Image (tube, rainbow over all chains, first blue to last red; front, top):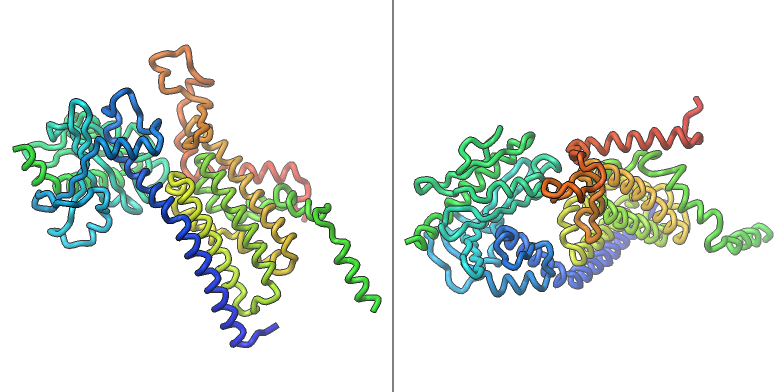
Length: 238
Length: 238
């Protein structure tokens, strides 16, 4: 049966309206739950960088969602800094999205900084974002209070190859390698991922074989991303 | 007059869940499996089967989408203008997939993160549209619904079988990432400290090939081979 144009257009319009209403309704219903989930997910990955220092032998993976939020509220101080290294008042670091900041002019970009405190020490958690082989990669690096030694790192990615580039997240031994390494040498970011195995044990970690571009992407992301924090780190060091 | 009466009779005779309906559910599982016989939906079967838990979630999502898109298409099949039927089918599928994705994001964020683009790619899964064109456009809603469930389960069954093989050989675990994660083979974390509490085959080193999509291709190939050699109906006589 061939239908008239009028019928087709009416049918399509009605169908589109029904689909749009259904989707809009569904989004409204799920909005609050999914934003909360995302927040907890991000906070978990930030706390994971200081997993060894949570105290009481706690592990991030054992914490319930409520405990994550509570710990974040009580032990994490959120600081937003600008490119000159000054603290921007009245802003929360969790509201800063590096993907959005990347689109701004370089001098206007803001940086999130999370300061985790336990009974003895302070940890500065820096966020970095860069490109892997297929898509964006990002990570959080926790630095001890000497502002040089790495306490822990987590990485995540959007679409790296499973088993190769995706190992930066899936294989805990890759971020694990960063623990204890030094970030800076003579005031410059020296940490890097070396293809074929690290040579300088103070500053280098082993690359992932078969994932050279992702490994190089991690190096580039760390060197550029951490350099952005240098002005601020220098002010608190003095 | 007699002809019309006959027609009415056959309509009344249609049972709610008779042998024909049962066949709609069992056929895609064995004789007419979407993956191993029709070779449809292989792309997503390669991509997400490295772990069992995401595969189960994917199987459920696809089953829901095939079932309800079949149902809705069948309900409006008399009214769909022939010239735009593909667009109409696509809108129905896309709406349902987006609803599933939103629900998943609200209910289980980490698994949504893991499946990432593949949930959205259910839209392009050939099984869904194939069933709409081949079955739902010509059959009654209830049967179309069952046909959708059957095909979703047929797809899901292969997905889970492949994922079980890949996860055991590639990671040594089952249901990793879910609350019921168990270690099947390979050394556990304390193996080097305490060799008395090891798991089965604690000498086993994870096979990284199994994590790559290529492994899924081999496994699906072998499954097709086994399926055809067991089921004489599938072999071409010519």
